Figure: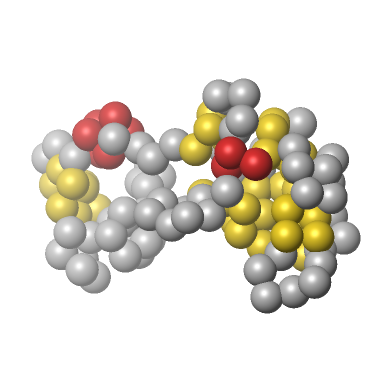
Length: 110
């Protein structure tokens, strides 16, 4: 049986103790049912939920912070991971620009 990684420290050494999951590295305990209910989600401009691995398209020209480069409208990207608690929730690999963080409201699901 495959158990999810620890939501606190991302450790893979998680074990089950009755209905709770326990991380031996950081001593975090959680109920996996509650974690699924409170899961962080990101929606695109059309309100569709975005997942890791989804392909998205930029809906407007996006200036790249600290650079003179611009990600043009229609540029495609693949979501590598979703980050909670930051301004830019999507860690993407953008065609022709490399890896960068993008806000969900500036993309649509392709």
